[in-house]
Length: 408
Image 1 (cartoon, rainbow, N blue to C red):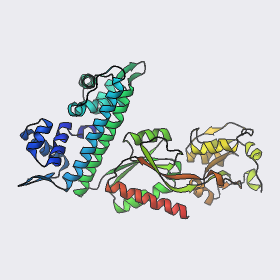
Image 2: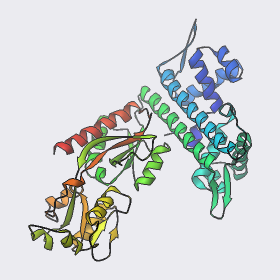
Image 3: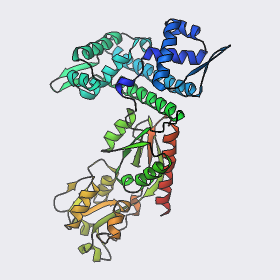
């Protein structure tokens, strides 16, 4: 992925995009208000950064190479996201008396956007400056210059630090997506150079960590051993936020019904029913018929509220007496298993997550019908996301791993 220091100059990207579109440096010069020598230098700098030739000179103009065509598509998308983010932010700001700035995408600089993202992440000017390797006065000046350019408030000082206005939050999301788009462009060009060392960032929910992800990651490693996979474990809300801001490439796990927001899409891979699990030798394991009252007689360990599993648990005891004893909340399967093995606690969980413990005779599934708890397990991605070839291959491997679980 791109680091902050590797984000190209936006004016250079605009110049490159115009040359790719009109195949002429002279025509591009009039559109981006840069001299022809400046555009030539901008393209040369991008080629050095990408370590690839982006254009071939012909009698009828500048023809993009394969690398140039790939990168031009990513650049166009990134600039569109920045433009949309700016327009939406100024629209929100205009509601509070700000001035609409139609040409913002032509005026904003990379330094200003880097400063905006840094402050959004750190909520503190000093920490933000340190994160991107600049001085606090320089970052503060860039952030305030962006506010002046947009004629809206982006930052508000509170007792906890710096908070973003609603306009700033909207713009930050689009800028992060734009930077993610550029990172994908760099990865695609690197692949053309034979440098297959991209990064896939996966948001993982509990079930995927035990069956689907290990199989897919190992399969990808056999095909492309240099590719890095970063698996992020976090509550669903945090993962969804990361996905929508370009910090994650995809999510794998239980899908939400209905789809939580309009800018993501879900792909169901298989249905997974829950099971009530206890230690081997648990008193309820010997009963042929278990009632809700029996289940309520024991303490439980469960994921936190707001998860599909917890919703099924609440439905199980709807209108009935709640379980006895203190309820422990955790999404850690290691902790859940540890609590079950040394007590009479119960849990509601996918059998896929405890198959190894069942095979070892440590845990057992209680004979209670949970067929109505079948949940769709699958992929969540951003709407209009264009995966790289490596990301597409990984998605196919995830689907294959899910198919094996489904058939098993």
